[in-house]
Image 1 (cartoon, rainbow over the protein chains, first blue to last red):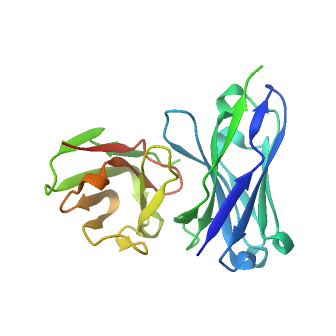
Image 2 (image 1 turned 90 degrees about the vertical axis):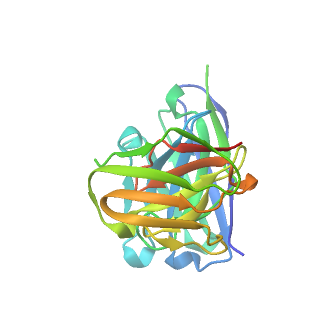
Length: 121
Length: 103
């Protein structure tokens, strides 16, 4: 069974930073392409960014609202993907989900339970 | 950037009825990229359909996806009470969602 477990959410002030982690089990993480998706309270889903596997160049791409502020990285030795969030804005407040892109086409086969990020002074 | 528009915003139907959810793109989308998700309150989304028409593992066959180009459809052939949820289409970005209510 594939499991994705996020952690690291919490309350942060505008302009602050936070790093989310997602530990993955039940699949070959080395070959996995991983994405982060967020959902503001009462709103729809928003894709945040993706990291490819090391074998595919470990390249990243990001949604426009977070580009230049958020960074996705991975540690294959720990089966973990990270989301570093800097210069946080109130509009970044959301539940952040870690997802597994199962076919390389942004089709997210597995999801974590989410971690809540609150941005408030 | 491709924008996906879902319709209707809300659909209210009785158990056993058929639901047809639409997802329209502002430009042509490769079918490989088109996915549908179900999300119930307080839960993470669940993949229903990938590559436009392929059911994900464990998804009942009353769920089906079709379409190509700019127009895609999710059909729930015989609604059951547990199908009450939000449904999202996605090709990288997500549509705004359709709420399915069971009377």
